[in-house]
Each structure stands twice: as structure tokens, then as C-alpha cells.
Image (cartoon, rainbow over all chains, first blue to last red; front, top):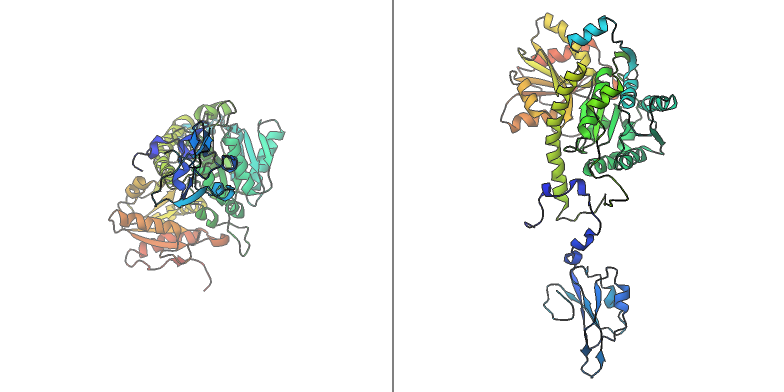
Length: 113
Length: 403
């Protein structure tokens, strides 16, 4: 909190004087549960990317080879800066590759931080 | 009014015109060259916007008159116009002000310098179209600058001051000019009006610093989470302090330019008084008229006319009442069930205690629903103020009620 601007460093009345400031607003801290993608289970169908209301699923050019030896050219990761933890991706995933994990539990998984 | 102005009137160089306070306010809006007026009729305000419509129809004012479907919309439209940089004005009373309540906070929180006149009137139920201050006292914590005026001339002058202060880029707060419905709104008094050039030189239209402009997009009315909201509310606290300074300055300057000013409050015979009566709007005028008589009868009383109410002129108030041990506050609204049931008396009581002073406060509620308050009642207030020095009534006095 202490590194946030003081009252007199903000424009009056909550006016936002320039466009595209939502990028500066890290809605990721609203999250109660975080989606964790099991890259081994993921079939790269892109549905999580389609459904995410915050464009917080990113499709990156990163190769991944599953334990069964299948190689994908792309990987889906979660941008936790903006993911609000709504769980739609986990709900829509046809192969149940996304798990919602309470924020307090340490768990490694796909995504960027 | 300065002697110079009185002399000009005597010589016939300036001619006061008979006007009701409603007409005086509409005329001030005309002379300020307002750009947008949103209007919804409500008694006893209606003739303000009617008169403005007349000025527009007669070609005396080039403004957009928006006929809206409610007071909620009236203030919303005025805000919408103001954020495009237009000089915006509206007027209301009673139920209208109550219906605006939500939007009052949007104007102040959004820092939109709308100016509005309020012809005070009682609130339903039961229905009363007559005067008291229930409406404005419900709006006192809405973050608006609030000034009470006591004559048609003061109303005209204060609307002009209001635009200067509200639109100041260091202030940017909405401003309410408050007067008594019927007792002032519909009674005639002589009023001197000023040339538009002179008025606009005193209160020039300024560029609203955050105006809506497609070329420079910005967002108004954002959502702020717990990390942000508080800072914007504190901005309003600080803006009120600046508003007090700017109002003092605007009033002094008004005196220099036009030869009339009123201060943030006015004191009559306060210097050597034993007790002071505090009142506002037309009651202050009635008490001022009667104080000569009671002083002649040897009653050492003073009168303090509250003008600026928000921000409260704390320093001036304490200085003006520093020589007395008792003040009697006449309220025209009821704070039901409160420890002190007159809202103004309650605040003044708190002020003394917060400063470690033991000045006694007598709380009197009068004029509810325009229960008559005449010369004899005014006299009685002064008498009661003096008598209360010996023993202050513990509870609020509901003056004039049948019980």
C-alpha cells in the first residue's frame, strides 16, 4: 500500500486522464484460486484461450513434449497479473487439464509470474 | 452595500429592480452567461427555471435548456454538460433535492463544478409545500459547498461568487446556494443587477481541466477498490479547505468590484454582547431587523448570520462568538432522536467542545413547515438567549409546537 500514490498524486475525482490504463491495474490480486494447467494432459485445443474473459491465457511458441512422447509446438500459460481466478477455463477444459488451486497452497505449474 | 453604491442609487445612476429571489437567481444565471440549464419543476423553485426559459426565449441568454423527466436526471444532465466544459446550472427544492441525493455525491466525488440553487422546503410525509430546512440538512454531508443567503440581492451576488469558486481549478466542487422557499423565493425586494461583461470578468468561464473530448480520451466514473477509494474521498476533504480560502478571496474581490459583500458570516452587535443568536437565510434578516429594538430596550444581544455552511468557517465563527458564554442556535430542521436535535446547534456544540471551550449552546427548532416566525418570535429568541445564561435548557426547544 505504501508504494501506491498519495491522494495528491492522483487526478481529482478518480478521473483516468489517459487511455489503456487497465494494463497498469493488476486484477490478479482479486484471485482466491489460481488455475494451474497440467501441460501433460493439455491437448492444445485453445478453448481456455477463447473463453478467458480477461485475455489472461497466453498462447506462446514454446515446444512441449508429453510423457507419452507427443510434441506440441505451442504451450498455454496463465498471466497471473490479470487472471482474476474466475475458473471459467477450468470449467470449459474438455480434458480436465486445468485445476483451480487455492492461492495459499504452493503448487508449481504452467504459467508466468 | 458601500456608500459609493448607495450614492450611485441616490443619483439615479443605478436602478434597483423589484425581484423575487427566484427571479434574482435566474437573472444571475443570465448575467453569468450559463451554457446549459437542466430543468424540472418543483415548488417553490419552479419560477427560477421558468424565468431562465423566458430569458432564452427573449434572446437575452444563449443557453441550452434541457427539459428532463426528474430531478435525478436534472442534476445528471447538469453534470454531463459540465464535464464537457459547459457552464451548467440547475435549481431544485424539497423532494427534488431528495431525489437528487445519489447524484449530489456523484457531482462532488467526481469534482464537477455545477451550481444549483435550492429554495428550501419541508419534506413529505405529510406533504408540505411550505418552507423549512429539512431538505438541505439532509444534503449537508454530500460534499457540496453550501451557502445560505438572506436576501434577493445576496442570492444574485452569491450565485455569481459560486461559479467563480466552484470552477476554480484548485476547488472543482459543486456549489449550492440556499434560500427560503416562499419567504424569499416569492417575495419582492429591490435588486441591483450588473453588466454581463463585468460579471464575466469577475467569474470568467474557465477550461474544465478534465473535460470529455474525443481527441483526448479519458475515463470518468471509474470503480475504485479499497486500495484507491479513500484517497479520492480525502481529496474532497482537502478541496473543502481550499474552497474556504477561495470563497473568502472571492467575497473580498466581489466587494472591490461591485461594492457589496457579505463575508463568510455576518455579525451584528457581537462585540459587546452577552449572548448571541445564530440563524440563517430569512430568519437572520428578521432577527437583524428586530435587534435594533431589543438593543434599545437594553438587551445586550448579538446576531450571527451564518452564510457559508460548508465548508464551515470555524475560525471566523469562534472569533465572532469568543466574547459570549451562551449562543442560541435557531434550526429549521430536526435531527430526530439525536442528542441535540437541531443539526446546526449540534455542530456548533461539538465545535466548542472540540476546542475545549465551554460556551453554552441553546438548541431551538422553529419554523417547521413554515410555522410563522414573526417579530415577537424574534424578540423572544433574544430574550431566551439572555435568560439561558443562568440555566441552559438541557434539551432542544421545539418552539411554537402545540403540546
